[in-house]
Image (cartoon, rainbow, N blue to C red; front, side):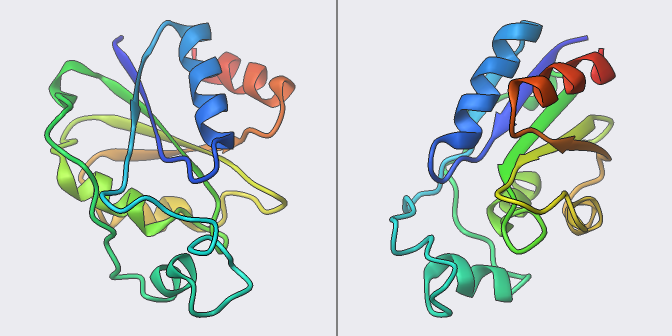
Length: 153
């Protein structure tokens, strides 16, 4: 089974987990990159007018991403990672799912988080793709990553 570890990382934490995961399972990686990178001010969740706060209040928000540099047809399974924002996936993940044809693919979601779980991300993301979305887990430690790898193998 050919696996892709796709991820969005605003501060570098999720990227670090994605790279470790890909190395351990022999998968390719793909970073979901916004056309306009997020600044620290954009990520200030305590400011109701910050970019991330505005995007997360509007579930139809689709931050533009850099596309055209990946062939998803090469992969059977996508391990899709992101930081939890407002108890779900950032809307940029919906942009990613709507930008490529994931028909017939299995997408296992995983996330990094400062304290919350995956929440309603599976349901929120299922609206953006025909792929099968499978709940994974929060990966905040090497132990959690090892357990996740055992579960998906």
